[in-house]
Length: 510
Image 1 (tube, rainbow, N blue to C red):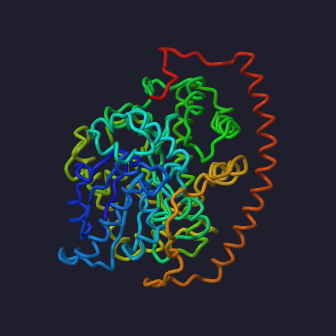
Image 2 (cartoon, rainbow, N blue to C red):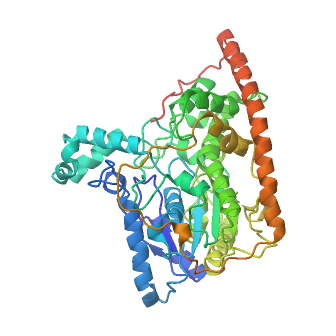
Image 3 (cartoon, one colour):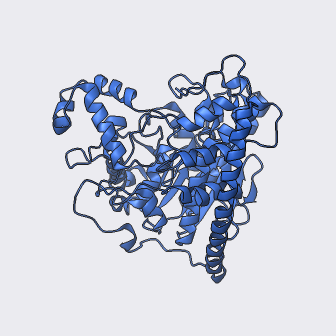
């Protein structure tokens, strides 16, 4: 099992103790491999030219996977049975390897945790990448025409300081340094490749999210996330609106119309009690749905539609942590149990009896992950059925796992069906790097047997097409109603039913 860590392609390290693979290896009886790859400017700077094409961090990952192919048998491993798994940007990396011909044959199963190729943090359009390169050049006193040569003469600390000044986080109004279309690792924008079925369809996939991904991003954690100061008390509507408008990563090619629709969709028009907690929860839901759940569901649907060699979906629903209860099962909660943190009792506030329960649950999670790595199935079908277009079943992962179906269908339709009609879902700018194209991933012969699909699943695809057509009609009507309600909403706000902001809560995301 080869681990790819996350950190928005800008921070992180395989040396973090939280990624210690010894408990996963021991309990799961698997070989765990971790490695580092270049991040930030050093890994993902791109000028859209052959001189600095970008994606160096992804090429590092390819080299690591090639090393595994060449050497893993010396450690008792099997080079023909490699599972790549990752979290957040690491999960997006796993998904991108499914789209790249350079990675074909280097892995045989994938586990995608809280990230996907459909997420807005999976890749950047070329214009944004070039603008970032230009901003970096200005910051460090270089000319774009000789940027590579000039950067080599600079101190690394100076470059990284400039990087911090020109880039932001997932919730800010600043851009991110991300993978790009370089015509080498990526031949088209990831979303285009994904929905076009141009990915490695020979591998089984396990993909999932945590129940409340957004809680992690608003908590002020020194060195991890700036968060929102005062978030423990909640936020008012003014802060909520400001945070939504400031975010630039809700969808690709974001427009004012999209932002207004998002604010309307996530304003609670019914429950008027405890407004500060209510707006805080709606903001957390927005982060969770837009950046994680909707892209994951979209990816799973595309995988199944294109007859991927079985897809399994999960929603992680359990955590005991030092974070406040309202943060929920936050981004990264699953890592606590995948890597066996309860075995070393990270959380000193947990009693011995609860610690035993936590260890039992961690063993269960490790069993799911390692069993998938060994067999391509995390559990028997009765315990964890494969994801299908008709039923869309997934497992709720808690100490008492349960099978659920159709995750948040209304919210998923909003992000995956309605909003794409308000703007182009993905950037369409062509790559500026002209290199010789390589063979498409899907045109290569499969070396892994594909599980036969019964006839009823083909019928489910047709049913899904009809469902999408119906959603389109409903979306059009919904958009008309949405516009009318926004007008009413603006009129109400002019009359002044705003909510006060006790304690001077900040309206600015750091």
